[in-house]
Amino acid sequence: MKDDSEKIKDIMKEAEELAEDWEGGYFNYRLVEKEDRWTGLDGKEKIEYYYEIHEVYYNGKDEIIAWSENPMHLYFETDYDIKEEIKHIKRASKAKILKLIKNENNDESLIELDKYIKDIK
Image 1 (tube, helix red, strand yellow):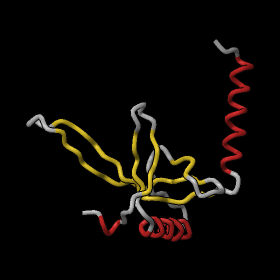
Image 2 (cartoon, helix red, strand yellow):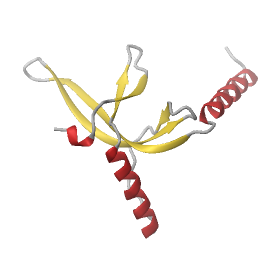
Image 3 (cartoon, one colour):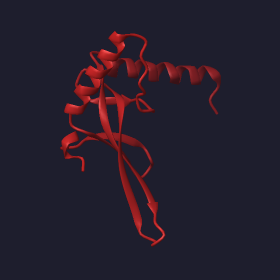
């Protein structure tokens, strides 16, 4: 079992790695496709797709390194805030949709689909 000093070293190393990843980085809002799966009364698997807007963070190489756990919510203090958020949402609506996927270990990642908001049915 690790003592406190080892845990602190691990946290510091992780923070340094994140800082390196973030160098030259940026974030934007993106539409993220998610899915709910369940078994219907007929015993067949059902899938429902839904979409949320998340903050997505990129490194200096335009690679996704993180995204917000929760979708964005609208909160404004000024008319400037309203205009800026609308501008970011419009930009997200013109970008390709990202899809949240999970691997066999339940680790999550985002992949870019060749799909836009106009393609949602």
